[in-house]
Amino acid sequence: MIFYDSPNPAPNPRRVRIFAAEKGIDLPSETISIVAGEQKTPAYLAINPRGQTPALRLDDGSVLTESVAICRYLEALYPDAPLFGATPAEIGAIEMWIRRVELVLMEPISKIWLHTHPFTARLPIQRFPDYGEANRPRAMDAFAMCDAALGQSPWLAGEAFSVADILLLTAVDFAAFIGVPFPDDLGHLRSWRQRMSARPSATA
Image (cartoon, rainbow, N blue to C red; front, top):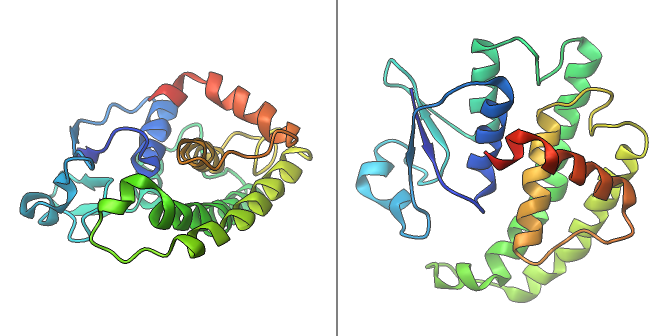
């Protein structure tokens, strides 16, 4: 296998790195520089026509893209210490929070990034800064949703650490990088982030 990675602050490759670190999986990798535009070169587009990272080329030459799909594949290969849940209730709760982090939190964050951040100003796209800023309250509401959940249990999807926590950490850290930190008064989220950031995998 070859894992096509991109360094921080790219959140999606980081999801896979943290997941692999939690599982103790050594992934042979190749770095694709987003800053240098390597994800849009013909060589990489032959691997992932969408021109995004991460991607995982399997031993048979087939390619998986999308970070959660890659993590699910790794979970199937290395099922011990399950991060997608061990019981039907855990599996359902984790899937629910995967969807919420991606669709309720990361979606508005990505709009803010795409339409307002100086880095994306150089992309060959039409930007709508007002629209980007209009997504900021949505991100704040999503942070509050996560804070409320973390007030009910130690981890986002319940009593056990899971891939949902990995997705949330990468979302929270990326949001802070682009200037969208969560409010200081969200104490449950703040405490959780401190615990997450202290895990060795967080530096992967």
